[in-house]
Length: 220
Image 1 (cartoon, rainbow, N blue to C red):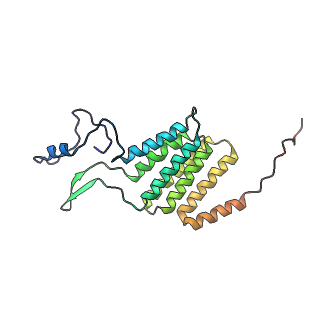
Image 2 (cartoon, rainbow, N blue to C red; image 1 turned 60 degrees about the vertical axis):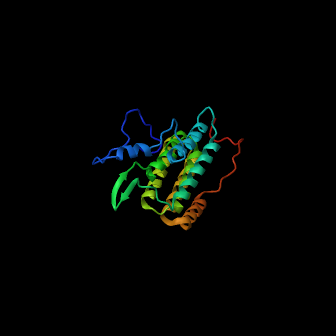
Image 3 (tube, rainbow, N blue to C red; image 1 turned 90 degrees about the vertical axis):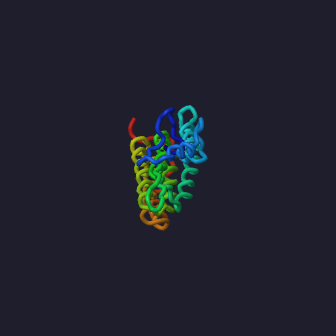
């Protein structure tokens, strides 16, 4: 069992192999149960609470993308704080040998919890998709572990895929593509490469012409 898991009456919470006298009672004594989940030792629960705020904000009845964007920013800041740290493996050693193995949250699962539901709920909001890509870009700028970088790339790909399916306006889709290319540039070349890529995007973008609503083209 891991922190936050539901414990059902009579269900096993641990496997002891080989059986050792007194270990079962020691495990029961060291297990704290409560009627509801708490974020004290359950990082996934704390993240889900934030994500729930974002998902509700993106519901048609509320339609508040700014709140969702604020949540995405907080999640990104948490991942940047996590960049130099190692997540617990869940393995406790005794005299160099594993004596206790517990379920542990890995980086891949953590990022899934952070962004899957927000991306799915915000797939029709260009602003939310762009912000998710901006946050992933910021996180990949400070992350050095290849497996974590691969996780961030996977989520950037998911955002881009949803945008291609859901964003109908070509200009909006172009903005999402630009942010995606910025993410890739940051991953491959760091801040210098990112700035160069964004400068190239700016030069490649033609200057917009003011639209005259009175102008009529074509034949009547």
